[in-house]
Length: 83
Image 1 (tube, rainbow, N blue to C red):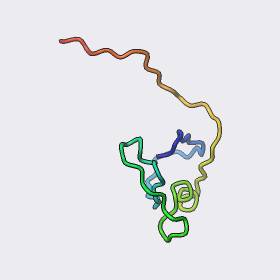
Image 2 (cartoon, one colour; image 1 turned 30 degrees about the vertical axis):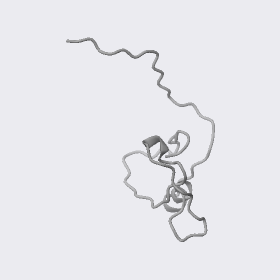
Image 3 (cartoon, helix red, strand yellow; image 1 turned 90 degrees about the horizontal axis):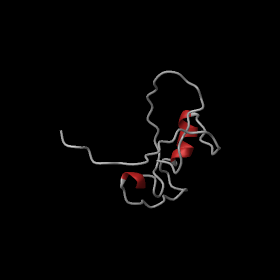
């Protein structure tokens, strides 16, 4: 949904179930094949954007930083041979 990876640095254990209410911004769903949406008016009474919703509703802050991430590199792909 975001334009970069999100890395969990809070260290909470276990599974958590939450449902934040937020308004998608521009091309957040473009990677899933959705058409870009109009950016909502910030003065409207609708839900906030994802970053604001995470902080207001869950107390989690998303901040840009440099960090090590795992990357999968595929050197070559071939069709499978017949059985």
